[in-house]
Length: 277
Image (cartoon, rainbow, N blue to C red):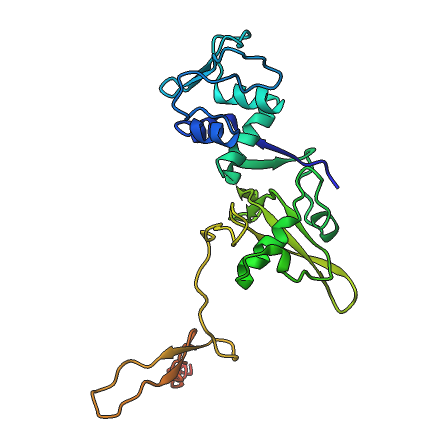
């Protein structure tokens, strides 16, 4: 199994955070909305006897006498200090607090995520969340308590994030990454005893299926008769009559070309005999 690593594109998460910094502060249980201009510093190990930490909602920055490495802290700095994270991990946590799991992507060692049953049924610990299985099934069964869901005896696992790709639009093209939403994977066993993996991609809440769109090349199927070349289509409306019902008729999708009439044989003109000398 490859070593999978989650990440968030910096520009994408900064755009998502803009204007929603307060939600992240709330998620960190920082009491910045209590009406006081200054609060005690929320950072671990900070001895702030004289409250000096404040959040400026217009500048979207935190100010405090305890901040010595810069003039003020942005929301990613606050996440890093509160949770002991580096910048990459702080971006991930911000996406989770905002419910933007769609921004979380997955990368590995360059070989790509394996799609065989054994790999899909064995997520790395950093991405594994088996509680998603009961959460989704409870929603489908209309149960409020996921703990009341009867789980399958075969293996069922949850991924916090699993890439979903659209197939190439043309032969030899590349697969296109659509999203990396949460996913649950159920083991199925065929009659020959071999194991397979059935994936269900979930929405951010985990209680329904993810909206992954429609393939651009998708076309509605045309109902066809069992015999090749015959299409079932409605008969054109007939003249109005009492008790008329719609019927079906068969039309050949590739009608045979009618044979031309046989050509009448033509005789070549008879040559006149040469005059004898």
